[in-house]
Length: 162
Image (cartoon, rainbow, N blue to C red):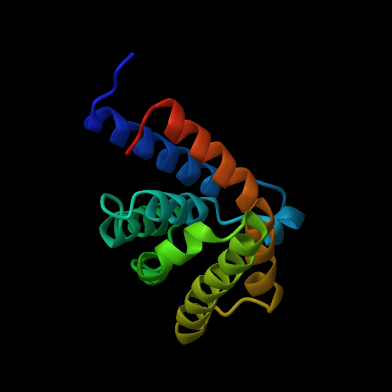
């Protein structure tokens, strides 16, 4: 079965839709601190895998969609995701060479930067959350990076997305 480039982008769009859905699925109160940043992980993967096709525009759109779906200040997630996508675009050639455990460390710091940006924006408008809201989502996301990376790489290879 042959897939054209537009069908390959359908796979990317579907994976982003799944990640967006995972970001808004209701979970118990105790687990909210541990919720991974699924959308950020998927955006980072696609920017890393396809830097010539997926970039800051996609990150901006996904961030805006997340803002609308979470009913947050419009643009806070979009700004954070664009900054993260920009950093990944700058280091993608080096990051690809790292083993998965080192990539996870980089992902932790990227998501920590993203969370600090959102924390800063919420602090400006008077909604600053506690310290653990900064650290735990980045940590759980970094721990899940290997699973996300291997799964999406397999999907990319099966559907020949390039």
